[in-house]
Each structure stands twice: as C-alpha cells, then as structure tokens.
Image (cartoon, rainbow, N blue to C red; front, side):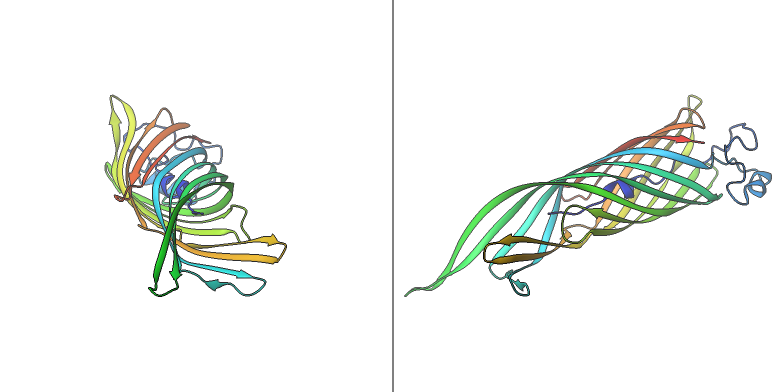
Length: 283
C-alpha cells in the first residue's frame, strides 16, 4: 500500500497573483475587508486578486516507486520484523480529486483548506527468501507481484507566500494532509513546494508560466490486521518514496478576474510522473 497526497503540492494558488498592468476597480471582491492591509497595498500601486477562491483540482500520478523498508508481522503477539526473509517494493498509480477553498488574509499570504477523494492502484513486488535445510544449506527464493486497489478520503490545509517584481514572481507553499485508506491508522503527509515564473499577457490574455520543485514527505507506516481462527494477525509496513522530490512546470490562463484554469506536469526523474489541472472561481 502506498500513501501519497499529490494534489496538495501542485495546487499552489498561482492564479490569484496580480497583473500589474490591468486597469481594475480598487476592489471588486465579495469580501472587501480582505485581504488585511489591502487598502495600503492598493495605494502603493498593487493590483490585488479577489480574496476568496474555490477550486476543483484533478491530479493523476503514475509510476512512482515506493520502498518498504521494514515489514513486521505478529499473530496474537507483538509484531516482529520479517524483512530478512521478505523484500517488498511497489509502483503506485493514483487519481485524486480535491475541492479547495482559499482566502488571501494578507496581500502576500494565502491560507487554504481542502478535502477530496483518492484512488490508489499499486503493483507490489514480493520476494520471499526461505532458508533451505539439508546437506547443502542455502536460500530458496520465490517472487510474485500482487495488485491492490484502495480508495479513501483526505483532508488538510496549508499556507502560501507569494511575491514578485514586475513580471517575475515567486511562491512558497507548505501544507499538511491526512488520509484514511481503511487501515488501522490514518496517513499523514507534509509537503513543501516552491515556484518561480513569469506573469503577463499573451495577445491581451493574462497568463502565467512557472517551473518549480516540491519535497513530498509522504513516508508512513501502514498498520492493519486480519482476524483468523487462530487469532488476530497484525502487520506493520514502513514505507517511503524512492525519491522525495518532484519537479514541475506549468501554466495558467485567466479568462477573467473571476475564472482561471491551470495545467501542471511534473516528474521525479525516476519513472514517476504527475499531471494536475483544474479551474478556480474567485469571489
């Protein structure tokens, strides 16, 4: 079983960054009191976005390799490590749909919450090494691949710092997520990302382009149990991604100050790829 929460790293709220050469009213938001210090920022010449946004973010992750660093099993007693006999690893494919709500509290600080659905399909590669007894001792090896499909729900939140100079901008994002995939414990993830890019117009249409990198700390311990006639079988698997880093590039088009659409693609350069896209409505 592989845990990930990729939608969180790729939805960095770049859409609300301002277009400095647009001529807009001082505030056309449904929430004129936000962001705090907004009047001072506008007086200094900044063009601020509408302060509240709702986004539907769809994310697909394919081919991300996961290492199982330790496997522990116990029947009616404390689980013990069997990693000397069993080698595990998996390749994960994930589809994720999130609804995200964000608020600009300050001209440079955005906070958000999100919740959504995750579907995880994994191919787990299993190698069992069994000692062979007899006049010629050795090890007998058996290999197999087990396909699993899991789904569940996630929730979490984070914060984004954004700034820029003329048509250049930079974004830092950090978020914490929790996901329930049906195991005894929920999974947790802490994801930090950064992006730099260009913000301007192409044929009078506001657009943005960026490149970025993200550190996905999705290491976890999957804990579960199975009730058997002989007692309760308990297992614990410590797992982590082979690569914690994802690198991405993307772009966004702003059809109006109310409606935007972004597309983002990324890779870990180890066979894992991610694609994210979604519309945002601002109020």
